Length: 145
Length: 144
Picture 1: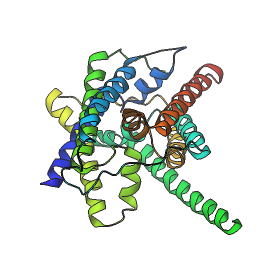
Picture 2: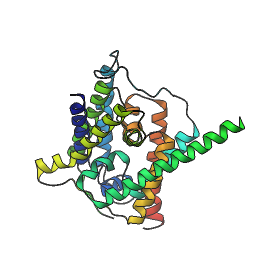
Picture 3: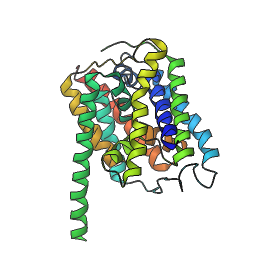
Picture 4: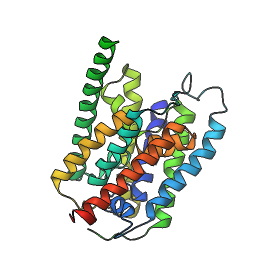
């Protein structure tokens, strides 16, 4: 039962991404191309998603626990550090080059288009490379300390 | 460059669905709807049940375009105006960036912003500015 509900939640997300235009690099890149072929559509995606989630979270997070889990798994950090800012900026550079973000590309795998598979393979390689780099940096930090 | 048509209603509708899915995932499983975290944890789950919820959620996401095909008779448009090399380079950089930044458009940009998390607000500003600058440089300075 839990897995069926989770599948349906993924499905709603996938349909949302599909009709929003987030799975279409041409549309994403045009959204950021203010000086050229600007297409403001994606403002409506993010605006709609943030406003709806903001309202929904008010109610959901007031409850003591989620319906099918012991507790809410929420990030607790609130400090601003360099990995957050530089990492996010780096993500932006990659997004500006490729036009796909992870949330846009994963549902787009369902279209069967080879470009999406190529992007996702590179994305996964990048994630593993960064995790490796992170573990090396962490190890160095602890041996120095 | 490919011109795209302004689609405010479809994009707003898509955004609302993304929001509803994010609320539902929090209400049911207590999890942030972040593509980066869900994907990274899929490859390195802490146990079997941690892997299954991610696998099922991802399967649902991937089935999304097929539902669109079923209802409209057309696959959602995926127009790629760049070379394969740029796709690979871009994808690799995105992977590094979201791992160090701890999230992407869905995790920071939607869920984190909706929680008014200072880290997510800063991350979102950082990647939105970097994306706009990158597109400007590639299209209008390098002329690619």
